[in-house]
Image (cartoon, rainbow, N blue to C red):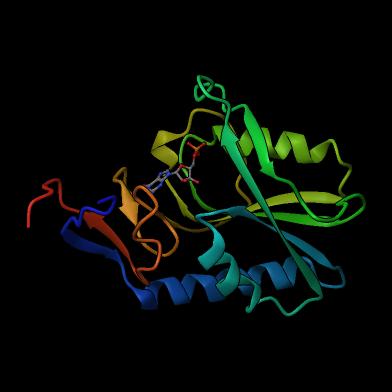
Length: 180
Ligand code: 5GP
């Protein structure tokens, strides 16, 4: 069986806290891009829940698109990414916001941002639900941050462990023990 249930040790971030920061980010982005159109890029899979909530707080014309990337095998340390699913449309001349679930070392996002910059968007920014600044290995500017989290492995609100737990509405820390 693929799924081995782990116990939830504790809830780190409840739904109310998530709702509040999503609304705040929506207001900030709407204010900062007033008079413009936005092109949101959801980095699959972890960002799909956050993306769905965030775009409903944006009071501007916007498009959404989805991208799937993975590290080249054996290249995790450089963050060089392979595109598994590319964008559907050109981003040339558009105001792009990359939507991430969590920024950890920042390596993947750093490479993804460089790659998308070569496609000549009018601007390119990054919005993340969660940030682990202690773990950063590259100096990447994150424009909008939902909240900082401690250096713990978290799941829920789109974040997974081996593909599971993405459906939890809040963010939790799992217990170390696999036993019931
Ligand atoms: P990095 O910033 O190191 O290049 O990679 C960020 C990615 O690592 C995230 O998009 C996410 O998939 C994964 N990640 C980092 N920290 C966590 C965590 O605490 N929980 C989960 N589920 N994934 C994480």
